[in-house]
Image 1: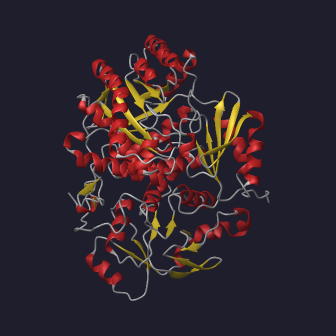
Image 2 (image 1 turned 120 degrees about the vertical axis):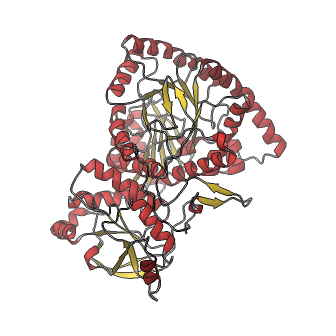
Length: 600
């Protein structure tokens, strides 16, 4: 075990989420079987999705499920918000079987344990959210003493145990799926709105299941913010490892409310791809605000690099991380001033992460610079005093660290290293005072499609940026000048290190959704996409609404059929607005809070 995968807890005990921070090795979990399909162990990383049809519309659910299976979906989730919906899962399953389709089905449960009990009669897995399975969210501030907290856990045990026992009896698996946006008041008051709170929320339910000798469990820690999501999953795996070898349950990965288009794919790649690179993840779901079958090719592209990957060990020679492993903190290099395209550019410390381009890209866009808007090249790599080294070389590390002045460092081209591990090793071994130029690839090539370049670049650069590593980025996997610039900036935005445009948190549609999410999100973007730095959440229902809007300035949430509630932060301020008026009322609300500017 490489100590680089460890961090200290408050009790001084080591926590580990990976065998080695500088080499790939998949975490091996126990195998959990869902409808005859194995998850974890040496099984491939499974791809799943969730249908958007109304659960009471049996025909629509069957047709959408069949479309998903045809494009390679291995497990299909269906929402069951009421007992009546849960009971109709019987009919959906029967029609699928009549068509010769045996894809495992998962019931998605929020708020109603009774619906979970009904659903467990007809599906292969039940997903429950610990934050709202037996709790009603009231956002109450309360100081629980130990006795009161124990009483709350006893109440949860009473509500949860019947489902565990039924699943045990019927051979049904459980996903304990924590969402950052829906932590219970009990967890919020004791642990805060934090990755630790997310993990503790899941472990409370897992301990109850284990007390009943139930082990067919899969865990997830979803958030719309990739930094929070990555930290929560790493902490979950570290805590499972610390609990003991028989806590080796499979992990389901996903970034919730990722959005649509390029932004949704980039955000998903940053969160899911970085954790897969850590060796974490046995099944994934890419959550896009699009038709559900569009999620599958993205998911397949994300898992393909890890299919059969046994890793390429790097001689890290006891290197230790110089960045926190379970929370975001930017690596604090010292400032350096460099010649930029529009004047001097300062890197390091808290300065903005800059976009570097090859000279050919700058030359290609020079005649239309004004039309590029915010997607401007800032540094030309051939004109920078860069020191490129092999981070495995003791001699080259010593030579760099011997400089009295601050130097811009990067990893040399053509090394047989995964760029994530190469740049981690560089950051661990060079003096912290030296800023780092990140590269998305060490082997620039024109091979591959734009979406492949998008996903690989977002995985590499996004993972390192969320580790806190990097003062400038150089993206070369995509050769088209305009697309490479747009992609570089959108990765910085999705990683949360440079907010230069409107940021949207948009959930994928499901059977709970109270309006058309795709068309509504498009209308909201058409009215607000020019508002730089404003964060807007678009939620189809209340399940994750207030919580996932914790970091949002404004929220647009389905309150009832045809009715919308508007939020400022987590507080609802406008209720039951007719859907046809709601976008205009959202604009009015943004104006009321002095966040509006007119379009240029």
